[in-house]
Image (cartoon, rainbow, N blue to C red; front, side):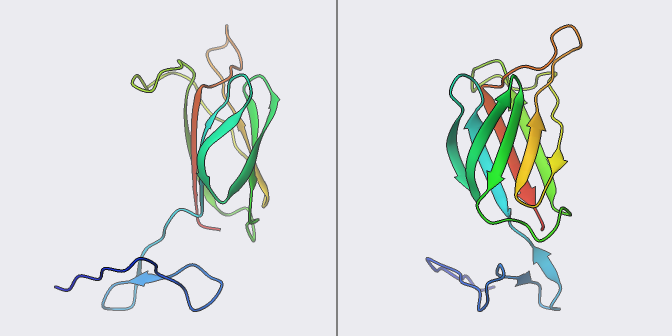
Length: 130
């Protein structure tokens, strides 16, 4: 077994680097975009990759704006949010809603019917593919 230790891996083209096994089969794809943001008060990105900004479009409504648009809407977004406001207790009953576009991703943070849409203190989104 060999160990490769480098500071940067760079693709020979504008495409992402491809990781293959010894048979030439692709085995790893990294996230193509991700963001960790505060969705309460003034919406603010804590950290991100390939996300230029977040737009607060109403209570519990957010739009993620991508730095580089996807070629199509076949990418796979995953999300998790926490409206409790602490970073140690996760696992709430809020769910997200996706509306995919090549340059944006719309999210909704919804609690039970008696509460409706709510702002989320912690919102995490990661996208693969595209």
